[in-house]
Length: 78
Image (cartoon, rainbow, N blue to C red; front, side):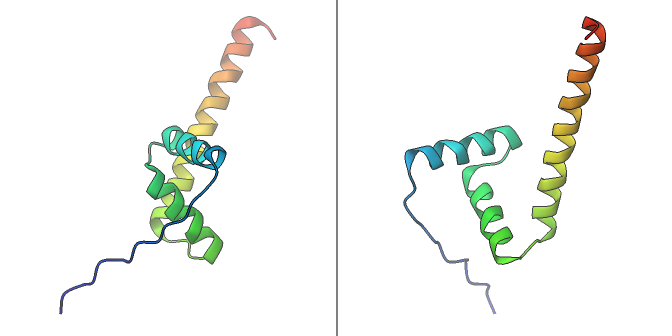
């Protein structure tokens, strides 16, 4: 028995939302489809391993950025 491909879902969004989605994708190293898939999964309460992994990766990236900011502040004496 062959697996059916997942159905495609589409919608129109404002240019501002599209820009925000693309910014999130760029910041997290994903594409827009992955960002939208995660957003829908979160809305539906379907937190699968890939969603959790991406969320964890985002948290770790933010933590590293905060550490770097703190190190710069220490160097600048602030």
